[in-house]
Length: 316
Ligand code: GLU
Image 1 (tube, rainbow, N blue to C red):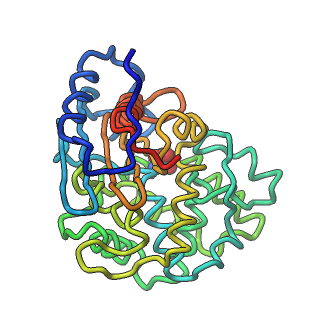
Image 2: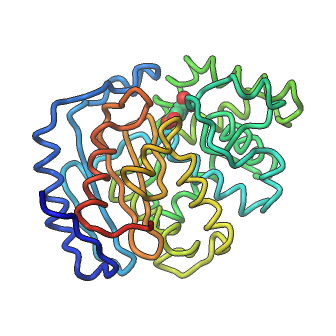
């Protein structure tokens, strides 16, 4: 076997050929895992879809497969709601939610009971529900304001909620309602349960293509500034913290495995999307709806593992 390259210069890397190589490798893989079943509307998605898009900070970009098709972002939006909450109340966010990996499933109730209703981190459901509660307290029209914020980060007005997905999740939202009720019993939820759930389900239903998603996350590769306008959304220090949380908590109970194999900060969602960033270099989004047993896109993980191995460019 040839040794893998180690690069510290992004300009010697041919991302176009690397993505083509990934596409060939993915086509040969046996399908593994299942499309998320617990949200009926998501279960209808074609499991064979696969797309990937990489944007460099200098504007170069590369695509393969269904990279322009929109999919449900689901938990990937937890990074965006966290960003909005930090921009509203700064470090006070950490009074309500921790920064430790949970080592349990995304929708687990167990730790909350023993940890007095303070979620381990903002990227699991309990944490994102507390963040949604903060947004309800500080925004005049939370659903509209969040969408407006996401459109600004994406640099596109063509980003929308999928109301059928939001309703489908509401119809089966017993665990999320349980998480909120439990946290409210500990005094860590200020607003009415249904109002917070409504924002949470809508935010999870936000749709983007891989191309739109990788552009949106360039912010985190660019030290907290929008690439197009230079507008600062997060301070450098807050950007470092959000990236650190993605690195340690972005993949449910598989954050260690993702760090080990891919070595980039990122976030997955049960819609089959994964976005990852290399600070100072690029942002990459991949979508393949079949999920492994931990709830992460099976082929998405594989594609990103190949990307960092073949490019030899690592943050470690
Ligand atoms: N809307 C999903 C839920 O709350 C998000 C889960 C995810 O993508 O991790 O169950």
